[in-house]
Every structure is written in structure tokens, then in C-alpha cells.
Amino acid sequence: TLEEAFFHSSFDGFDEHDLQVAHIWATVSVASQCETAVEFGVRRGVTTLAITFGLAHSAKKNPSLTSYDIELIGLDQHGLNWPGFIEAARERGVDCKFILGNSRNVSIPETDLLFIDSYHSYSHFMEEIRLHLHKVKKYIIMHDSSATGTFGLVDQKEGYDQDHDYKNYEKEGMYNAAMDFAEMHSDEWEIFYHDDTGEGLTIFVTKNKEMR
Image (cartoon, rainbow, N blue to C red):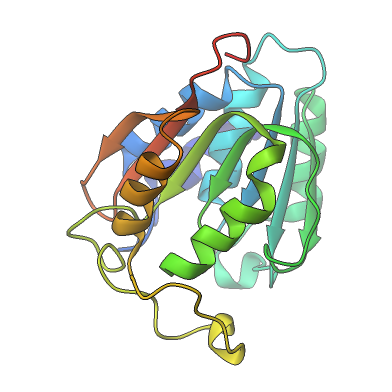
């Protein structure tokens, strides 16, 4: 069942870059207030399950999650059994799908929630925001935003993004990106939750009360 998969994934087999338990439940809580969600960066599927678990407990009529990543990690790498997961989510009323793609090169549907845990660089995050912010109605959740975390003050140095000549900003780090986003978009968004534990988590909420 979806519940069994969620609890097993959430509390078993953590590594140093997974969400803290408190961050998982913060994600569940936010997702439960939403009808639609988009996820950038799936990896082992911990947040995929957390978002879906929250959507399943939403009072909304047609909850859905669209997940994007540049690779699909399967069971052999401790990822999700996607066919089984999609069916379990459907049984709980949540429509889930995975799309192979770079978050800078996709067109996302309008969404209540955007969860960002893709390539950990200041420029990449800012480009994701530039491209997709107009589609997000309620919440943005950002992982790896701790000032003391691995990528809080410096960019990720390995990974697919290094194949591109891409750096629009001199600044580095996801903590810096989170704080600068909050300042640049202070008329429309505010920090709802921030925790530096582990790799950190930041949640932004719209200031448009009609959207909440």
C-alpha cells in the first residue's frame, strides 16, 4: 500500500543527503493542503512518497503529482518501484507520473506546490524560478538549503549541469539562493518554514491569501 511504502521509505535506509524526519512531515503537511504538486529531483523517491502521502490526505478532489528527473532510479538502486507506486497512489486517489527531463528544459503544469531538489547550484535554482514561478500558486519547498549543509554556501561541483556552460550568477549555494529568493520576491512570497538541521529545508508560501 501507499502507507506501507511511505513509512518504510521515510524511516529506513537514510543516507546523509535524505530529508530529516521532521522535514518529511513538514512536506506531508504542506502537500495535504494542495491538489497539485510538481517535483524536481526524484532520486530515491523519499519526497515523492511524502508528497503523495500528503496529497492522499488532502480534501481536494483530484490530487496529482508530476515528478521530473534526468534519470529514473529503480529498485536495484534503492529507488521506487514506479509501476507499483503509481498503482498504489491511484488506489488512494492520487494521479502520479514520472517525466524524464531537465527541470530547465520542461514545461510544467500549473501547480499548488513546487518541490525543488535537483541540481544544487545557485544559478540552476534561480533559472528554475525564472522559468516556472508563474505556474506555482501556493508553496515552494526547497531542500539542501541549510547554511551549514553540503551545498548551503557552495554549488554542487559534479553532475549533469557541468556539461553545460551555464552560470548566470557569481553567487553559489542553496542557502544563499533561498535567502535571495525571499528578498527578491518579498512582495509575493514569504518564508513559512526554515530549518538548518541536516541538509536543511525551506518552505515558501504565497502572500496571496486567496490562493492559500
